[in-house]
Image (cartoon, rainbow, N blue to C red; front, side, top):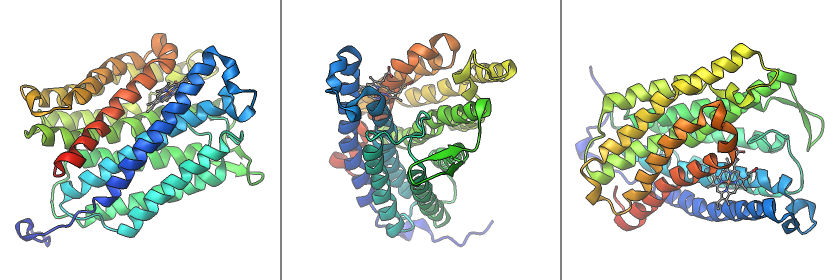
Amino acid sequence: MTTDRAPTSTLSITYDDNTPRLFLIATVVWGIVSMAVGALIASQLNYWRLNFDMEWLSFGRLRPLHTNAAIFAFVGNMMFAGIYYSTQRLCRVRTASDLLSKIHFWGWQAIIVAAAVSLPLGYTRGKEYAELIWPINLLVVFIWVVFAINFFWTLKKRNEPSLYVALWFYIATIITVAMLYIVNHLQIPTGLLHAYPVFGGVQDALVQWWYGHNAVAFFLTTPILGIMYYFLPKAVDRPVYSYRLSIVHFWSLVFIYIWAGPHHLLNTDLPKWLQMVGMWFSLMLWAPSWGGMLNGLLTLRGAWDKLRTVTWTSRAGADYAVEASADFNVWIELDDGVIGEPEETSFTESGIPAEARERYYRVRQL
Ligand code: HEM
């Protein structure tokens, strides 16, 4: 097979490290904001007077602010930092467009600010993790498309013929989040601040939790696994424990995860067979979840001494395993919503940026 790509040995590439740096700074800033709001609403659960009798400080308005900030601002910015940083190195090419990177970064921050203003004011679609009103939804779609163009254009220009598994995880993230977000946000506006969803009743609930569950899957899990597959082998200077396992658990994860949403609707009006589909696929998810976790931890086997901060990632890996086992069944789902999910997200996702930051600022070339 012939290739018209430049021979890599003669390439001199100046990576764009400014974009990942900006995203990392934003991660820290929004992390502080989201967790401060989390601490406030946690306190309100015990001392309701901490809402100071102001509606925009009430639990109902600040809870979505906390979850949106934690997921889309804290983890989102971290994910973009990791993707921009590693994709360039995995493709041996600079990100395709500096302009698109800038639009992506500033557009995403504008979305977060719009959320931080509109949610306390009480403007909401009333759907968990999909609260933002329709004008902001349009901005999200636009910025996501900018991100997708920049990413796939970079892949097109790459100087490395093979696509390492981390890139597969990023591709799954970009495509699936777009699909989920657009379908669950289909709505008919009645004014600037209000719209009706196109789905109704139990269909609406099903689409919402197909989205909600897979927001966890494809926003909080797949990109983080991709980032893990880049950073861990680099950090310990050895190949991933099993490349075959990484591919097998990638395909099984993305195939199985997408069917698990109905487990959020157990004992509701959703047809029983669909509830069962959600349950069974949730149980089957143990296998790919553990596949990724074991692959990560086994990559570190015998090389723990090479990492000063590996405790973060190993803690995250172990936590992910517990969470993966606990999250997918009816018995634990409810409790887990309050305890496990924030637990998992804080440790799993903050483990990676903690290490990334460490390496990025001190070692620089990972
Ligand atoms: C200082 C740290 C944190 C505190 C004090 C905190 C507090 C809270 C509280 C009080 C709730 C609402 C529970 C309820 O409705 O009964 C909550 C929900 C949630 N938090 Fe946090 N949180 C923290 C960190 C995080 C982080 C780092 C993330 C994600 C990266 C996160 C993601 C979530 C999610 C997804 C929910 C909704 C869970 C569900 O309803 O199933 N939190 N958090």
